Amino acid sequence: MKEQFEEAGYEVTLEYAQDDITTQVSQVENMITKGVKVLVIAAIDNQSLTDALSKANDAGITIIAYDRLILNSEFVSYYATFDNFGVGVLMGQGIVDGLDLENETGPFNLELFAGSPDDSNSGFFFGGAMSILQPYINSGKLVVASGQTEFSQVATLRWDGTVAQSRMEDIITSTYSGGATVDAVLAPYDGLSIGIISALRSNGYGLETTDTPMPYITGQDAELASVQAIINGYQSSTVFNDTRTLAGVAVSMADAIIEGEDVVINDTETYDNGELVVPSFLLIPVFVDSSNWEEALITTGYWSLDDFDVPAN
Image 1 (cartoon, rainbow, N blue to C red):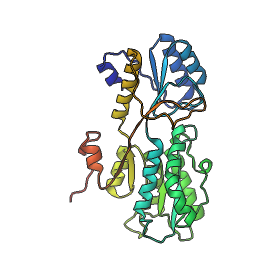
Image 2: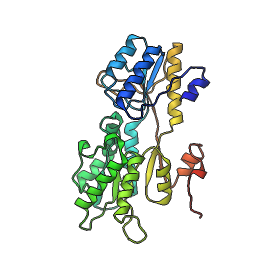
Image 3: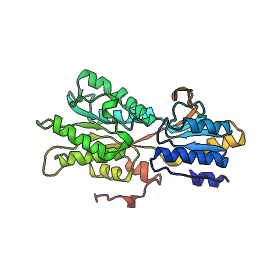
Image 4: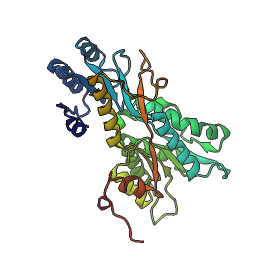
């Protein structure tokens, strides 16, 4: 995004808060003091910037929420993001297709993971996935054997993969030690997926020395480790959100604001932040699995084939 802004002729201040809320609030306040024209914010915590955004509004600064919706502020003017509910739908449909639930009788054992509760995207990912999976749970074709089905039970603070790994270990020990196996895992982020895969493999899943196959495991972000896991057959799918395109949307929004032109949006109904429905531009995510990872990620130049260890045919 910085590169694209600079190519358009703008001076850019780019700060990373390293996942520390206090640091991010301080960074935003410093930018306000410097007199920036537009603030593009990927919020660590969706409710900690309320006072800072009020100060920005008083200073005539326009706010664009980037990737994560900022809640409880009337001063969020625009939101640039992917269709986060749609991301969850792709994950849920991946499980349905992977297990062939339309034709198989089941039941299949499913375990659920969600993202960080302080990230507004987490609810959309989970809600989208459950809109697809819940009917199969209701019919008994999918069974959440652990009984952990509520968002509050399955959320993973700070999207921490080690927390997900530990929770998966606990679920296997408490629920599957009698011989039952996990058939699918809903994981909304590749960092969680890798932790979940580690827990499963340490318990005999997907090993040549056992006959217990890996479950269908979802993910998101097309991170290197997870794409390699898809190539190796450990992870089943991921959802690719091309950050280059998202950056371009934010740059176009800011440019239109500064030039006094109409900001292009395509959604005025979905993202209510508690104070207003934020005008948004939603990009379409891409479902990626073993059948299309090269087309989606290599041909587009997002990753290089040299980044991966691909077995010879």
